[in-house]
Amino acid sequence: MKKSIHKVIIASIFLLVVSPLIADTVIESPDKRINLHLTDKEKTEFLSEMRQMLASIQGVISGIAEEDINKIIKSARYSGNRMARATPSSIKAKTPLQFKEIGGPTHMMFEEMVIRAETDDMQSLTELTAQIMQQCLACHAIFKAN
Image 1 (cartoon, helix red, strand yellow):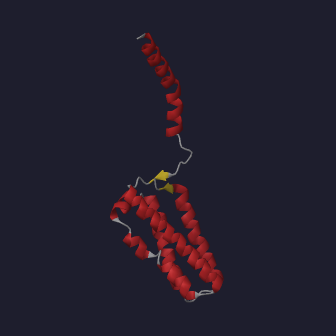
Image 2 (cartoon, one colour):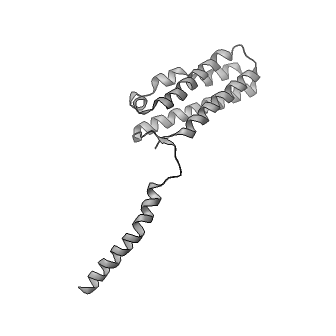
Image 3 (cartoon, one colour):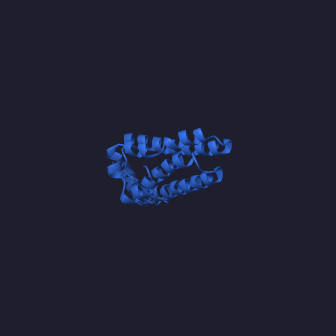
């Protein structure tokens, strides 16, 4: 009986000492970005869209390097306004205004890329691509999908 009490006391002391250390590690996160609080299904869809936007950027850069206007147009079109309209309403409802203020113009910049690919030189298209990437970086610096 005394051994059981001693075990309980030792375990209690251990928990009192260790619990705050564990809690601090779990609660404190160095990542201060805004969490969008998506469900697993929403997160999967959302991250799929992010990967598509990255693939669009890669395709545009490749098209610029090859001076292939059709490749630039095709790549940019995937991440334009059509993608924004296709985003599930449950995700749209969870994204704050600040997210929309970055995301909406970014999709429109892809639309602008489609239009400008017909007339602009490759240097101008490279500069527009850099501006799109700045939008992406700004958004990723502020938000996370956990």
